[in-house]
Image 1 (cartoon, rainbow, N blue to C red):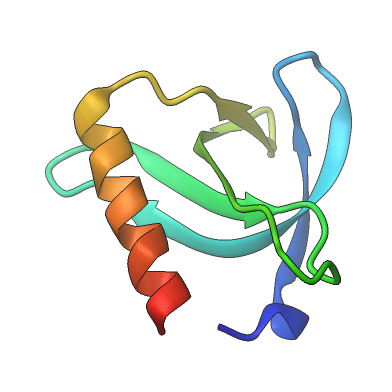
Image 2: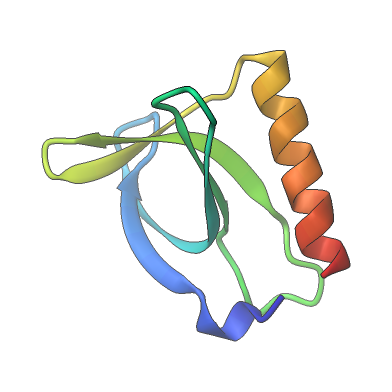
Length: 86
């Protein structure tokens, strides 16, 4: 996975603060309108921390929401594992 080509987007975090993140990938859940953002804050670090959130469009921007569904988490963990193996 090449971190150098990651797209940077601005999102509003749950506290209402605008932050820049690097998009690793976006997962869409089959038979659902949910989309999940897999991202990092620092793509220059040796060990990149990977985060995942539900991403929602709101007022022309994006907001992140916590993932609370167990099935969603399992799908995301599997995707992250596949990404890190690739």
